[in-house]
Length: 118
Length: 108
Image 1 (cartoon, rainbow over the protein chains, first blue to last red):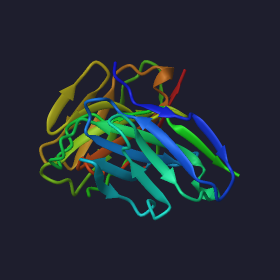
Image 2: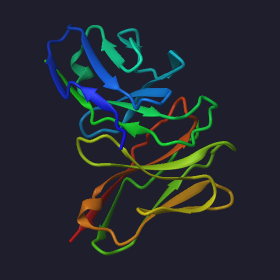
Image 3: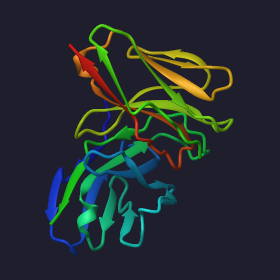
Image 4: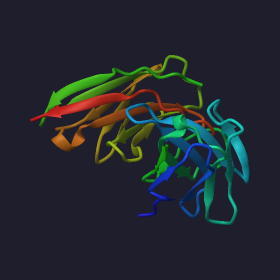
């Protein structure tokens, strides 16, 4: 079964450092997403990406965050200067949705990257 | 974006049928209703999706009344391994928002 893969599984960093989380979405999917989940809390939407540009973003996704699809397979989330409150599990997801606005497909999630900011 | 409301938590016993209802009063005409399951430290996993009436797969059934303002996820004969958080989602494909979900605890 196709799957979304994420690296690293766990990253520890110092406050103020830059972090890049990597994702390989399912190969024929066109819509990509990043979510985060602080321990014990709900899954929070960060950003969606379609046709090589950001489709939607939440208020969490401020100037410290950026996403990129540097090649045909990877999808990255960069946090420029990490803060303590960025400590969370970050999930990448992809879907075969075609950008019509109607969500009829399945959203496939990776296993997550746990970020710990000290 | 349609907001969803679910019970915060539910308990049930092994072998029972569990029904979790979600309210989505301002669902849009084109919105589908999708349910996800999440185990601790794992990404959410798709369970079932529907638009109206009833949908059934090998894992669950989804009941949607004619007005589509609510939906009910039905899990037949639950086991301990069904202990998880269950999310009801409604919305467009560019901004899929998770609510707080229902924490289902299955007791032996």
